[in-house]
Image (cartoon, rainbow, N blue to C red):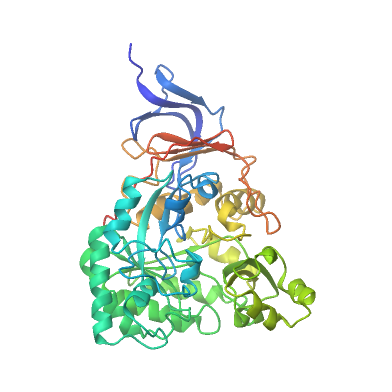
Length: 484
Ligand code: ZN
Ligand code: CU
């Protein structure tokens, strides 16, 4: 007799990703899809996992990542699969690995150097060749790809300190069209950074024109997440309206003590505008951010940790204040000696983080930086922290809602068909976890540690993580966008 299923998950507490209350049941998987859900006690299978009442949820979708290169250079994707992530959205904050039709200018301009400091991975002349590389050598997780406006500026412009001229804008628009045709789901910008701050709103609109026709997304690390955040939100909404695209506000936060508490104001505006156009947002569950090291950012932080340094790598993981003392110089001088470098900045309010997380439409994204020497713990811990610390421990929302924010909601917003929900016919991306113990193990002191309570992770029907380690399976696919 041939078994009914390839994989059978018995005695699960099913949290299906829609936000609905959990229910007991079994899940049968055939090939890469969910074939049955319910009482399957009579069924047989090639492989059976008995959950003993623990949770089966859709695999988590990381709404905001910088995994463009990690998918190729570390295809086991351990920081992600170990926390239950089965799909990553790459190319955020304006920086994508592709396209790079000419040798990347040296030294690699920050923040592009977050993807690769020496630039050897900027080797894909067009977006299609990057997609092909991901398909030829799949990773453990699925991915959906954004093309970065800053990357396109580096490709087309010799001087990033000015707005693009008409020719450069036209060239970038053509590259956006090519990327969307090759499978990118949208464009990201990082208007906050030196490499793109000179871009006018009109430049962004003209570069993003093809989004309307392709049904692509506009994701943005906004120009200002501090004093002028309302202006930045208005700019984002305008770009969405004028290009006819759905916007995603990346890692929504308020930076600097003067802006603590203002999430009440920003969320009210976002909610109001949601009635007029399609707006989404994501958030990571920490009061510290992380990006390249700079003096102006350090000046608004209560504490700064160095996450990597090209010139003084031995200081990764240390406090900037201690490094300055040890070197016998000012913090500004220490920053100059450490650069190019990355840092973790404590400069957000816990109340804002909680209010933004609790906001119904907020998705979870890690914003993890996979190539840092001493990364922000969000790289390994964002998702279990939402489930453990914020849902179970603080009771910010039921675990069903936490799961929805990392699965069904995200799949719907990004147009990822048949992902993010446990139902018959959906792709078999699942995370099996213990709701009593799930939580992050990664800390600022020890950031590279697998989460607690994540038992088994399944991507397209194949087990990629089990018993505290990766299986070596690499069933990940490049996902495209179905316009909603
Ligand atoms: Zn960003
Ligand atoms: Cu980012």
